[in-house]
Length: 108
Length: 112
Image (cartoon, one colour):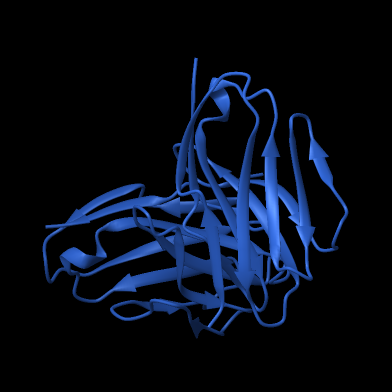
């Protein structure tokens, strides 16, 4: 059975801190790993990773995939209150399987 | 460009009532999905479709039915609603199964 596990389940940090969110997976027929940010409504797409060791960056967010160890991390540097959200990891085989998410709260 | 549109946005049902959630996409995507989201459990796949006229079961299909009569529409039906179906329902679509999905804004369903 396909499985995606995210950690931690939740964390609280102060503005300016750096956070690392983890995602490990067991999926047959791996195609891609995706990160989403979910605030009040629908998840919004952050990154799609298909190759090991290639970092993807967007502003203060970055992510990398390790296909040998079957995990990915999402880094957020210099966190801001607007980064408060649920961060979802999903792995695409024949369909996307989502982890339970990490709830991030950034305090001012 | 509307993307993925879900209707209704909110609904309250009594136990045993039926209803249909509508999902429409205007991106010519082949793949469409219905997920439910419950606290602490992430998004769980209910049913999905790989093209017009096809449907398949996901992780939690019991109590739900779906139809994809037209490529742009994917309907989710609850024949006899139960309180355990209280959840937020998201529809999504994609070109291929490994692509980033485009999500609708969600339907918050409460069954009392």
